[in-house]
Structures are given as structure tokens and as C-alpha cells.
Image 1 (cartoon, rainbow, N blue to C red):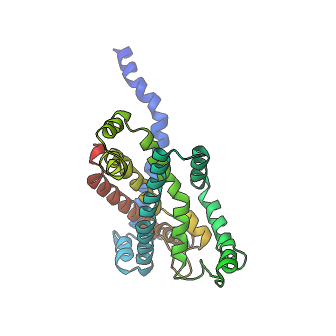
Image 2 (image 1 turned 180 degrees about the vertical axis):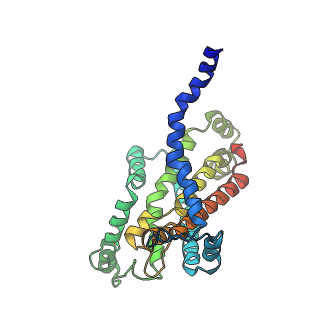
Image 3 (image 1 turned 90 degrees about the horizontal axis):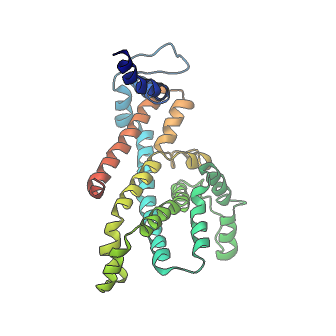
Amino acid sequence: MKMAARSSITPYLFLMPAIILLFILTIYPLIFSLWNSLHIWYLGRPQIKPFVGLGNYINLVLYDTTFRVSLINTAIIGAVAIPIELGLGLLLAVLIYYERLKGERIFRTVLILPMLVSPVVVGVLWRFLYHPNVGLINYLLESTLGVGRVNFLGDPNLALISVILVDIWQWTSFMFLIFLAGLFSLPIEVTEAALIDGASGLPMFRYITLPLIKPLLTLALIFRTMDVVKLFDIVYVMTRGGPGSATDTLTLYAFRQGLVYFQMGTASALSFIIAIIITIITVIFFRSLGRELT
């Protein structure tokens, strides 16, 4: 009996270090952050933590104009950048898969490179490219088109568009890579049967290829939507959310609330709002486009 009891406990003993580590690194911070979001906690007076319930959430959603601007900016970035990235990535993948262009390997490597660069490096690089005085883009505009120098990151009307273009430049390669891998994994029997039946060109892509890669389309949309909702590094390096709040995003506003204003309760509430938004969007995508995955 003792041997049987020991053998039944042994697997759990091996799992205990992983469970303890998971609790320390994930579960405890999550619970602590939730507790913070229900209190007003200013790090300048850490001993005072009045309980306000859902007060932080209500103030953010109903009364905080900066939160609403950050939410709208994040939504605009996602609504503009993700469809363009998806369309360009799919187009490039289809061209390489069906046309078998010369220098395909070199072309594929060049397309993937932007995705491999750190977002902080991307932010610094494009901040210099956009610079009104020494930036390459302004130099080309002035020397070739005769356009005066444009302050891309300092103009409230252009700053958000400039950030969106950088996001498209970096993450179109992610979409391209996913779709190209999906196209190369398609069952060749289906493609051959469609060719024998006379299918080709756009009809073949619409009725054969696209339905087969629809699960990958769903996953790509989910991954990129999560990334956009959490967008921080590039915006922080390029604009710090400015000018004014023209390029503020949800995560940047949460960062500022927690590590600049030291309002940990508000920052924690913001982090949970971001998590709720990501969860809702993910569920919607899976229900509308992801039935093939279930």
C-alpha cells in the first residue's frame, strides 16, 4: 500500500517545481494586478490603497478622454494596417507560389527581413528616415519632387499615418510567411484535380486555394490583432504618443499611467481592459472565420 501511494504521488512531485514557477511568474502577478485594479494605489503614497471596486474601470471608460483617444488610435491602426498587410502578404505569397519567379529565394529572404528586426531598432531607423532635416525620405521628396520638408512625426495629421506605414513595412512579411507556408502545405491532389477540371487563375484561387488556407487567415488575423492592441515599442521610440496624443495607444497610455504618473490602480485596470478587448476580438474571429479549426 505504501509503495502504491508513493508511486501515485511521484508524478505530482515532479510537476511541483513547474507549478510553483507558474504560480510565481503568472498566477500571482495576475491576481495581484486584479487586486490593484480595484484600488486607488499611488506609488508616491504606497501605504494608502482605498478600495474603489470598479471605479477605475468606470473612470477610464466613461470619463477619461485620453483613454478614448488611445482606444480610437489603436482601432485605426488595426483597421488600416491589418487589411493592407493581409492583402499584400497574400498577394506576394501567391505570386511566389504560382509564378515561381526568378531569384525566388533571394526575394523571399528580403521580404522576411523586416519581421526579424527588433521593434525598437525599427522605431529608431524610421525616426531617422522621417526626420524633417536629415531624413532620407525628406531628402528624396525635396530632390526628386520638389516637395518642401515634411514633419511626418511632428504633424498631428501625419503622425498616425506614419506609424501605420511603419507597421505595414515590418509586419507584411509576417503575413507573407504564414500564407506562403500554407500554400506550400496544400494537398497537391486537390490542385491537380482542379487543373484537370479546367480551373485556373482567379477562379482557382477563389474557390480552391482561399477556402483551404482560411484557417491560416484566421490565425494571422488573430495574431496581428493581438500585436496591434499591444503595440508599444515602435510608437514609444518614434513619437512617445505625440504630438499631443495623436499616436497614443492603449499600452502606451497604460505604461504612462503606471511608470510615469505612478497610478498603479489605473494602469492595472487598463491592462485588464486590453486583455478583455483581445479576448473579445479573438472569440469573434474564431466564430466568424475559424469554424474550420474546430
